Length: 611
Image (cartoon, rainbow, N blue to C red; front, top):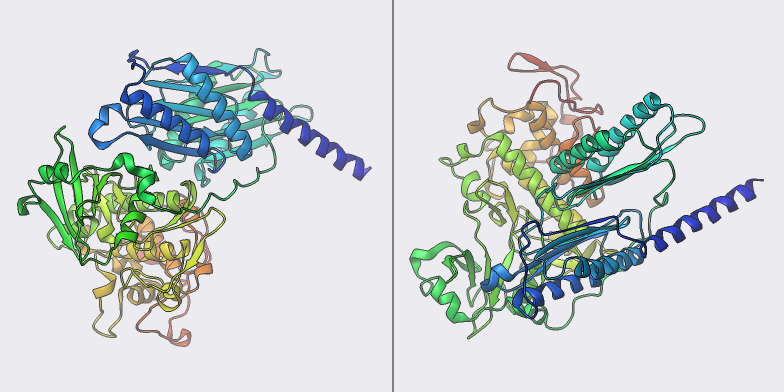
């Protein structure tokens, strides 16, 4: 009997997968062309850029984790740039994803001929393109809902079960690394409800939560009395049915992408600018346009003839970044599309020059504010927390959600830029490394980077991994909290470094002493303590003890998640034996007259007071 049940399950699963693959050839549920009916003519720049963008989406559909975005167009023809993205349902295999994207591409060109903006939804995927930047911003319009024609029985019980399903779906989707979740509930012995929720992984968790909440609000008006319903938006979608419409086993991982080879610059030749254009934009690299300088060379603010402001990085001939690193940075950053990463707009390799052109980020780098006593006060705690979360979101994209798994290898405060809203953008990919999606580590005989941010396994053995970036992130978190540089911080009594000092305060039960005094009292103590906790988890000596970025984001946004006890950090200058450390505290400490439970234990940290 057991064998027959197992065989039935296998047959049923096979049938479900056949249905899923067959549905791709069925009619699309909904589409929408541009609202203002802006059109383009064949054979113009936008038409060529759009064809290239859509072709890139198809070719990357079976190499991605179900989401990919890209844009095509030169720096000087910004109005003709074509942006595109697709989102495949998280339960389908890469080849099904590619088939759906291919069908959507053919359909969208037919449905919206010569339109500069369009979106089409299938059951298994969504494809979208535009002549404006559409990445990393939550958008809810145009939207669409569809209901099952059959009325649900026992409406009150059905609604109660559906409410529970929707709440669970949103919580699971927002808390997952790829913003995807499925759920099954059994409101009665004869009825089951199946639900699915998903957001595009380029938006932040709070935006995903809002988008799905709004979907549920619309669904309650259209579909709560029906046996099924769905709501589609550009940045999210949610659906429920009384039958299993999704695969209940995880899809196989996508095949590893081919390793980059040959001349990487040839892959992005459409970004190439001539030297004359760059000299004109910077007034021939005048000192008045210089906004930064380092061992790599100088950075200038430039204005192109179309009025666009850019940041121009001119590598010095004697800089540590040679032609190999230069090509690496161009090839890498040109493929990255995320609002927490600085976008490369062009490059120049003429007359011995190596020049990179980036989007202009007006508020300079994080270290410009963080380590300056006069400017530290401009970074209040909500801003610092926003910066920590934003950096984590950017690293998660590099490690997990981009086409290649990318290890930055030089994350530090000076490589985090701040835009006009003080949102962080990770910059400088000159020594970054590409791994296949089935790889997470590498080795090098050439140790490059910044001491104080480099993990011990990298310094001692040349081994780098996503956990090396996690270590650098942990150092950066402790710097953001303290306002002090790790590589030049010493506590005079024991010549302790920042990591040792943070560890000592943690063990003594006084972690808030680590805080930058310019922050005053306007902060959540539990939020600060949790960030210190996470920072210490990230700088542990054994890479296997450090959390991955998906877990870190969950820790940052969930104050009821229990955290493991951190171990003594790597590179602790003053190492104290465990016997000489105080015992685990069981007393409460006081903050603003309020008792705060001990956090140096196995209990989860929970927010007790308003933030």
